[in-house]
Length: 362
Ligand code: IPM
Ligand code: MG
Image (cartoon, rainbow, N blue to C red; front, side, top):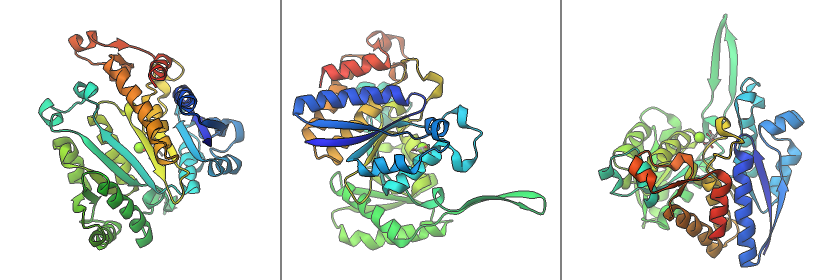
């Protein structure tokens, strides 16, 4: 198959981790007789430096025209002082909205090889951690009006949180369908004891439920959910939630699995053109030092093969290669055990070497 992939290297460690993911894709293409063409897209801080805009329209158009988009990470302290509407993150938000990818899928799964890296007690980890957060990605407070105004000499800031029935329904359906393909448990997370948008959210989820009799729907308030994720993560199969709650809970969920550096994500809308990115940031402190963990990005590329290109065997080949490298004891710094005895069984490697070891096993 021929596929065109828009590639956003971005800032910080972005270029290093994306290089390893592209190299993994190349080896996979060779093995399975595909042809992947990469189109470079500037987004984030590097686009601000080059174009004075975190995502010029022409760059967004390249993404929309591609078969899929692979993204490293954007942002960094260099652009901390640029105005809100010009920040690198704004490029990412515009990309998500421009591509219409309303459904963000963030798996929280513990790799057995890394179980000791979880900060949770062994007895909790032993019950299993394997759930998915389905996060609404192009609505809510992220995309409401933002303004800061002067009211009688005092500054006042406003951020508006809005959801329509249609927006809730389409993400709700993704939640139910995701649960249906897994263990059949869907937990809808909101703050319906305080927010109108959450009360509407809950109403819509229950209106959809009868259409999915094979899925067991439960509700949970977001503060309780934050607590339950560390108390007993084994209770969750699929969580469906709004944009900001999903942002916060997915960082929490990543930590209990050991390392944020391992976690891929997919964002999809009405078409098969998806956006695939690791959930970690641009880690400017380790950028350019060959220290980053490329696995989250490599696994994001595998998700792209599976969800956008229907290439299951190809995705499996990459995922199995990652497992084999972990089995063999290779670790980047972020997943190196802190316990001395355990560390003695592992080998510390850099970003490039980790990429090479994975490629070797695809
Ligand atoms: C994420 C990030 C982004 C978000 C930032 C960089 C805008 O935290 O993908 O989770 O808040 O969505
Ligand atoms: Mg986040």
